[in-house]
Image (cartoon, rainbow, N blue to C red; front, side, top):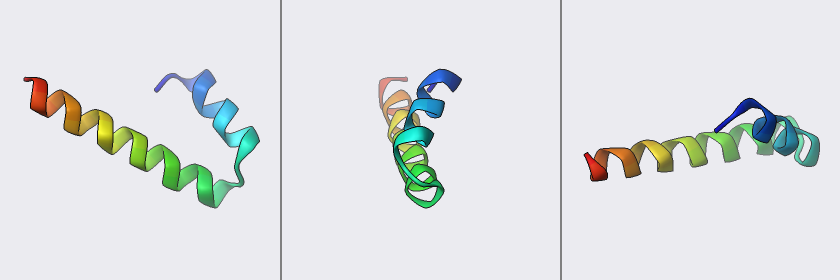
Length: 37
């Protein structure tokens, strides 16, 4: 995820939810890239 997208999420959610969501998204992205490669 790029930084601008992260900032948008941070504005929408409080820090607790933001951190959970970013972790979820990044782990999904990592999982996808592992599956592709």
